[in-house]
Image (tube, rainbow, N blue to C red):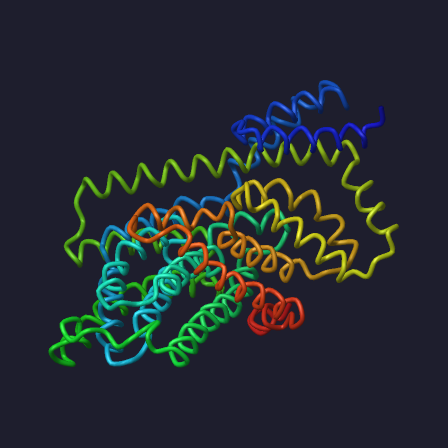
Length: 439
């Protein structure tokens, strides 16, 4: 049996084990050792030691626990709820105002949290009662919450982009800059869609009841500035220092983490119980990601050394299909994998496998990375597995799961439109990094 064929069996065994339910990290390590030993002997053990050591010493990845901690501490300070209330008050006489409020808050805090489950859960807890009291359409409300919650995958500083940078060999700063315009575009598409629906059918998003309106504009402005200015300054200073080259991603993340503690102190929300919970949650998320990073780097190295990626690339090129058709096939493959898998194994395992083909086709890797990010964001809204639906159902049990699904499907269609716009007009992604860095 040739090493290339052995690599194909390795991929099949990996996918089977993951779909059956084996832990991903240990599956990758076990299969990497077994198939690596069969393919090239004792060298596999040296390879494993090298990749685990290199992954844990990768300085860029130190930004993961810092950004995670920043997001969790900002959640503890209840800044999302305050901002939602202020936007709701400011637009209380506008049809569909609650949709605007949810999507606005989701966009701001997508930059802070970057964790879809946390964003959807908090948005649901924060807005569902108001949606119900104002008699808003459940499907459109569920769709706006779940779609808004997925923006954290894309809008920088995104943890996924931090992980993706070293894999694609693209600076994380380039990915951050490239993700800003697509993220804002999708948020604008969501908002425009909900407002259009409310204009055509006002019963979907009526003007909020009198008791939910502010008693004075002073109350609105105080709430708005207290809820908006501090988190925007924190995220802006952290992200801006990275994008303008004043700090590395790790240093910018450290600024954000310290700033989140300061904000929670200013808002008198800091206590040692919340601080301990934030540290433990950060440790849990970081450990999961870092072990997966090390395991997938080792697995990918074994797979690459067997020669299978080269064989796949040569085979795909022999199909003599236009590059854009091959790209669409790859996007469809990633979309289907994102149903049973989260972004971590897809970015860490699948991307290294298809990367040689993408390079051979001559696509810009920054552009491709953002395409993958938007694609994975779309999968979060795609039944039957869409985890966002279950996060929302868990905190709003009175909403029927069928209605949540139907609401999500509308926004999944908008996501597909956004993805196609990025494919057809690459400058949506590339303009900002080219402008800033001249790449």
